[in-house]
Image (cartoon, rainbow, N blue to C red):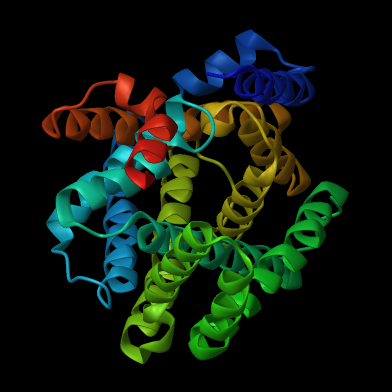
Length: 335
């Protein structure tokens, strides 16, 4: 990695350490460990297995976004999504996302700019789902937590603006083409040609937003996949015999995933535990139980998909080095 990348990675780790300290500054290890030992292992296992239902629906959403470019069987996308999760979980800079884009190009011939556009659209849909998961429960739950409202206030304009821009580009591709032609004439010939080519690929990547069936499928899958993930949290909560309901778990999922905008270590360690425990404490869950739940649910959604993703990575003929070198491979592929 370059010096700037090392610096960014160290800053992320430092942020994670700070959030870990805040989340567990009043930690009582014996009580937390006792709470974890009392959790129902069968329900924890069920939650870990059920999480892959969410992964499958997320893969289906990607299929809807890609279908206007090239129809790809769902069974071919699930391994790439798992690889993406694994890469993001163990290496900084969202390297897993880059790796699944590169593998999509290698395996199915989809250009990098087109695939990247679909992944960005996924993140925008995710952000809107998370905002919904925060706003709707807050209408029915009285939660005096400024941290929760700060996350929503900060994230809302980002995702709403991005959504408007992408839909505008998708609805009026001719305007984008006219702008690309104008700019490409100003630039040197080779640079202008590269810009125009990439712009055309981005327009192709937005095709699903102009196709009602694909757009509806992507939106439905976005809400369904994250609703399934919230049910994983709820299953783990039942394993801890916590007095919480499903809307509370929707709120937890919404807050912790929007907090993913905060730069941190791979897997969002520290940030995840802080916001999960903050929401639960705000709804009157005992602090020790909230801390134990945060640690365990993080492992339930982190460890199994990471191991499965590494397995699929090996099936692709690649090792851990492919994750750390993802950005270098991206530059080579673009060239």
